[in-house]
Length: 190
Image (cartoon, one colour):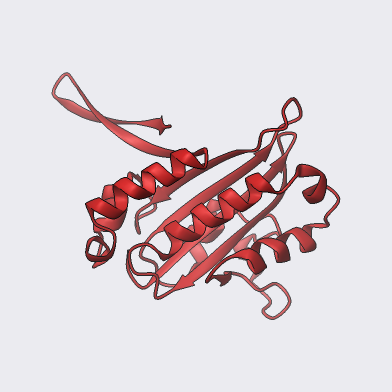
């Protein structure tokens, strides 16, 4: 990917959103945000829900931002008042907030961490978006700008393997032909 990318990290406990915070990556050519998604996803899988559950929204947000390898908070609540028309609810940002109000962008991601009631397993999913906010697969995501130079086919195959090994589902649109028309549907790899 190019110079600036954003990732929304959403943490849910028992199906209810606890925190949703967007992160900003500067000079994120090719793989910086992708590697941070892998890092944060795996870290949250290794972190017990019993450590996450008692945290306040701010503590969990600070935990996510602090554990990120290179990012900073996209919307620093304490420092900048945002226009009411932006509809940014602190610690509960949406994809729309990120899409509409981020710095000039070369791509987005959404990392979803779920701690379900009926399981001790943490479920982690990753979805990628191009700079027009359309869901895209990994090859299309990295080919924008100079990204393919830094995240070509060898990186992509190893990245997919790491996601699978860490039990992080990469959700990608699938192209299929029906009646001479291409339709996009969502598939989960892994």
